[in-house]
Image (cartoon, rainbow, N blue to C red; front, side):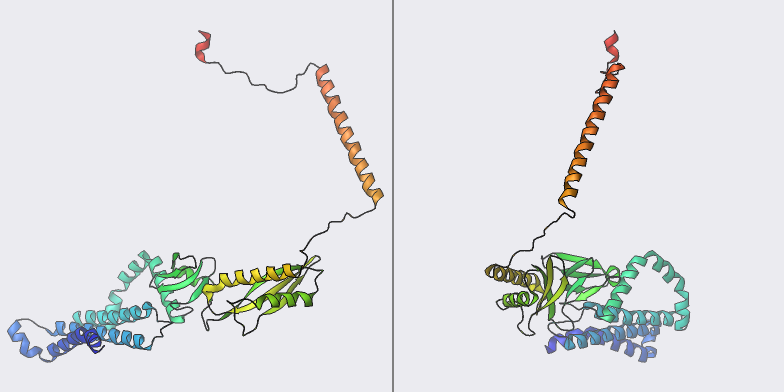
Length: 339
């Protein structure tokens, strides 16, 4: 443990101390080397400080992370980039012998051109930084990204977020797409959440009896929580059926599909045992029997008139020497048939 920590800080600390020593003893070293070492000392110092600072930040995050909800790697990479960018600009300002503002102004045009060329990459990266700062999800969380994917977060990178779905498929989504969609986190702030299934029963069954039967079905389920207790709510009263929402609590999102299957299986078993009639729809024709008979008679008369009209038209065409148009195409002949 101690050796791994020491090895983690050995190189950054060594480079930083070397740069400081070169800066302090440059007057004694330069006569032997024959050139100025002030710039090299400053460069080593800046790089060593940036490297050492990023290692300290990473060490603090590793010590403070939780076993179930580790910090994303993006945080450590982001802080390392910030440290090294600061060291880069400070080194450039020292080498150009101008202030930091002048160094930034001189590189603004180059940054603008590069930004336009890699704007999509920059959009994904900035979205990843925003997601990392806001923290709508962390590694290990089960999330549902609207119209995109649903699964467990495996890795949060600079440009993409990787999910492992319930079907054991690996989904890679750009961070810019995730930032524009609705995110449902089933693991935060607590891993337990409430699910529900919709059940439609006939209006013949009273609401009180229906609620008792549905709650009886949940009593045998093993994958749902007993506390908080399941409950049943009426969602809709229709002309033929009544829709109920059977609500229950789960502790793990990976058991969601199995829990719904178990609950619905017990619901079917209880309803069959109680011989609850299945919903049925009765279709009734409005009007008296006289109206129905008159409508049938009218339809029969119209069909007769249609047949008479067709027969008269056929006789008229026959009297004028017209042939029924069955097929008017003539066979095609090749040019060689006339020889």
